[in-house]
Length: 244
Image 1 (tube, rainbow, N blue to C red):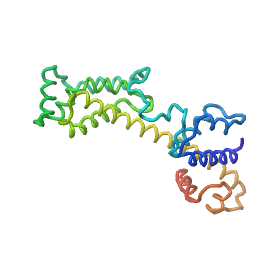
Image 2 (image 1 turned 30 degrees about the vertical axis):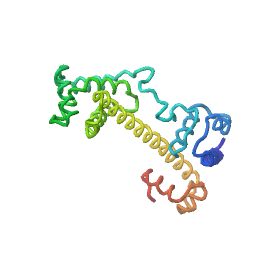
Image 3 (image 1 turned 60 degrees about the vertical axis):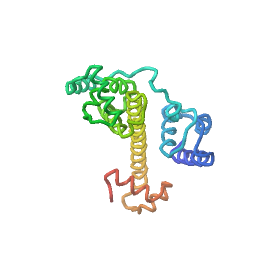
Image 4 (image 1 turned 180 degrees about the vertical axis):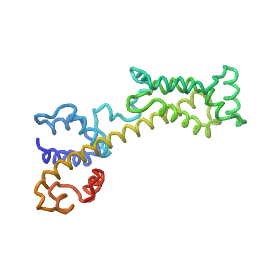
């Protein structure tokens, strides 16, 4: 399948998905792209591309809605040596409290009394670190994930007085913040990877079209040749560092 056929198929599968409420099943995608040389890695890039376009790919594990996600992965990903070193240094800044101090801080928080944000973080830090370890993933540095959890914990305090099981609720709010952070960062990396591929493909195809230095094309003419919107093409050209 050449690049023009591939682009046409991408457009067609997008159209079908949009007509189906922005949903498409993996079986249909696989049938649609059932061509020699279309391996699993290439299919995964198609799924990622569809997700970036806001299309839900049914049957694709990375596309599961949040409600279907388990709180804890089947296997916890071990920290890298760099992350272990970070965590060791990070914990040096905390004097972890005993149970009595922890209960006193949570009681004051629930009653709307005075407390220091640092006290709350110290009280729940061990549980928060464990939660971050359970959600740890290769795409994100553990330290960044943990800091997001801390922010989620402090943001949740605004509604703390209304909650019964305060510590459990605060930790779940922190978990939700970390999950959203993972989702956002993973989505951004997918978009970046797709954009990089667009830049590479555009560079290759423009080079093929402009091998004859005596023939000059405008952006509009190149866009017509390559079946792209001129605005999209100009945006991708800027990423190549060549505005000429």
